[in-house]
Each structure stands twice: as C-alpha cells, then as structure tokens.
Length: 84
Image 1 (cartoon, rainbow, N blue to C red):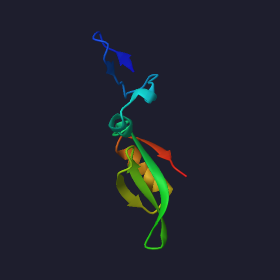
Image 2 (image 1 turned 90 degrees about the vertical axis):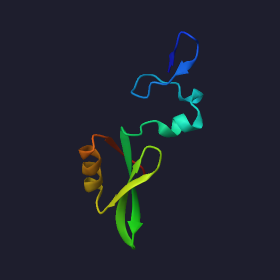
Image 3 (image 1 turned 60 degrees about the vertical axis):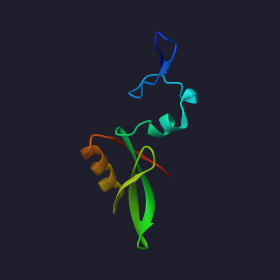
C-alpha cells in the first residue's frame, strides 16, 4: 500500500509489501485477479476432476488432470496455485 500526497491510500496489487488489513472486501476479493488462478480438486459426473478458479473464486474451467489445469493457467499468463 502506498500513500498519496493527499493522504488517501492506493493499493499496489502488482506486488510489494501490501498491508491487506486495510483493504475493502471488494479490493481484497480482486487481489490477484488476472495474475493468479487456483486449482481445486473436485468431481464431475462422479469422476475426479480439477476446477480452475480465478483469485476471486469464479470457476473458469474444469479439466481432467492437475497437470492440464496448471498448463491451462500458464498458457493464459497467470501463476497457478493449489488449494487442498
């Protein structure tokens, strides 16, 4: 988080030491959108599957393998992370 000259706060989502305790709920939910996607194991039609979700939790895709999920995320210039 940076301070502007007018003492208002500005959030630098691109990196750095950001103090997330001062983020509004919508700003917190938007952290990492377009930069990070997470992979969550799930099932689809009673078969193992992997959900690819945006940082705010929106499901973007459902694929058959974890490796395919990570490749899909990287092909879209985002960083994959796992959720257990």
